[in-house]
Image 1 (spheres, rainbow, N blue to C red):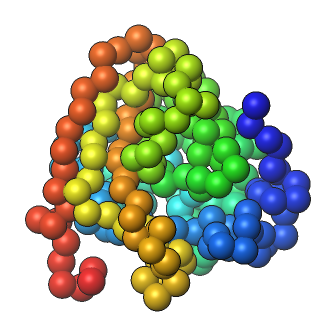
Image 2 (spheres, rainbow, N blue to C red):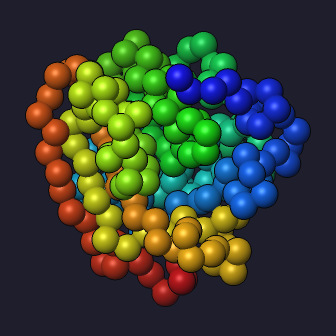
Length: 208
């Protein structure tokens, strides 16, 4: 059972909450732009996108650059999008599709996935989440993946999500993480396909 962390150690707590002293405040690990660009070159959406953990806009900006209408929200105020919106307590979808890099610790990512699937069940849209590749091989998630498998998994060859976007704050464990995009559609039972994406062709000098 996933613990309830919406009071002391998660959304709804103080603005600088941490799941542990070793995690970034508010679980803020922004997505490198090339990781989103590579994904959007492979996966397409037929309507507006909601980014519910937008931070400073890392994913939302790339989605807009790709031509999508984007609604960006976040619980915290990073100076981008609508601040103060708790995705896990939002009762109605704000766009057809949901694309985000969710907070990971203490089951938050699992709760984001469940909430996103519930929201898109009402819109007919897709859910795309940037997740730790290791989460695919977890006995606590086996049943969930078997019951509602993603339609597609895109493994990224080079992607590091730094704490607060600062490489200087990343330890060896963070640098060893490997990431993938998982995409769920509205067909509950699918045969998941696995794809490889290289981020280097989508990086620019200004991103370094």
